[in-house]
Length: 281
Image 1 (cartoon, helix red, strand yellow):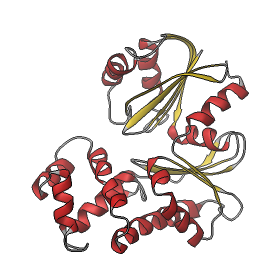
Image 2 (image 1 turned 90 degrees about the vertical axis):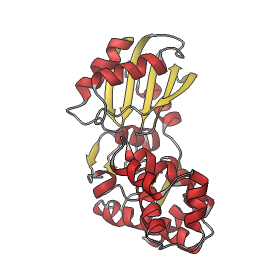
Image 3 (image 1 turned 135 degrees about the horizontal axis):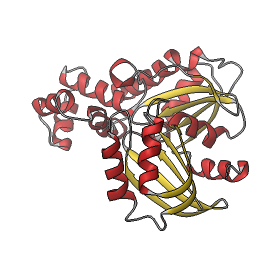
């Protein structure tokens, strides 16, 4: 019996499986050790996951998460081990989870476009190179947080068509002052900004809106993917933004003279297969 977790900054997707067969899927809040303490992570698991989980006794737990940097992995392992009776606890980055879930044992350039964004070159076994995403203030091009940031900035500076600003403020029941408060003074501004980005999809027929999304994807490809050997390898994408904006993303990839390998919403199906085939237990 194994439990696999794919965690971004917004949500965590858990899958309990036995010999490659999915037994249970659970969704909880995102668990990012870069932002959360060990106690907060333990509390989240005990309050959100354990009441729903069919069993607490496991052969192995594979946790792939945003913010799981090498220095944060021991903390994640301790928090998980305190909550579950498990023989093996392996914690890796969400980037490796995406690579294993999309590419399996095949090399390729793997990208995440969700609340945040990231990319890597994966040789079929390990991540060989990774351009630092830098977060939504300095980087994270093409992510939900950055799309939300660009949207709000353009709306509040009157750079988008007349009427969109009022429509946006009405739909989200926000004032400009409340937006500033949420972005600069309250926790998790990246989640807040990402929650606003679906407005772009609902208004994607507006040329200025479509251009904003397309340009952000091109920026992601230029500033990240082009630093890998993209002429020789296919590009794989995963994440809610990649999935829901796939038509524009495909256009951006084609315009950048790249070969698209595939677009998926999440890597769980591939991860279940990967851990069955590779028999890590």
